[in-house]
Amino acid sequence: SYVLTQPPSVSVAPGQTARITCGRNNIGSKSVHWYQQKPGQAPVLVLYDDSDRPSGIPERFSGSNSGDTATLTISRVESGDEADYYCQLWDGGSDPVVFGGGTKLTVL
Amino acid sequence: EVQLVQSGAEVKKPGESLKISCKGSGYSFNNYWIGWVRQMPGKGLEWMAIIYPGISDTRYSPSSQGQVTISADKSITTAYLQWSSLKASDTATYYCVRLDPRNFQFDPWGQGTLVTVSS
Image (cartoon, rainbow over all chains, first blue to last red; front, side, top):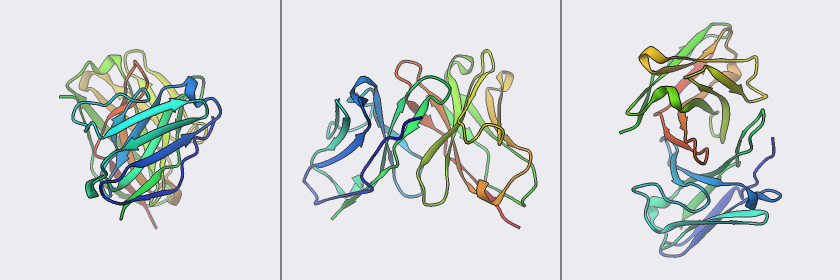
């Protein structure tokens, strides 16, 4: 199935805004989901269906998806946001699940 | 509360067989896809297989097809991932995941099972 392209790393100072992208041709036609994985822990869903937040996820986490790029935006970044972030979508068919390669967010 | 609780870490030798488990609770086990995601040391997430316990429908990633077997026991709301002959390259953490049927996101995730294959 298709590969989702993420930048390997993003760095941001505390209090600033981090943007992590996930690219694929016409990704805007799909629902994109985002997971946060802190060191030594299982991933956690932080956004689903492009921009919806599960219960317990701060409003600082938001998302958009249009054209060839989906974006996870983290406002007012905190040290606790430092983690790997993965995008994912469902393609259907015989190989339905697609993950991005992951982005390491570093809080300077 | 929806929970997925996985079996503990395993250390195996190449060529040995293994079956790891994931017990689901807090939801209708038969009516949600449940599956496995692999994470090799220092690497990203790779989906391996999913199963719909109600009808035992299964899907495998192309790289997992023929390498592992996914199954489920509805009576004890438990899913399994099985290897008949482990390789060193199977060393990884394996996460059990439930697939939400509305938008096909994985939520929740189990705590992970570390499988180490070494001679």
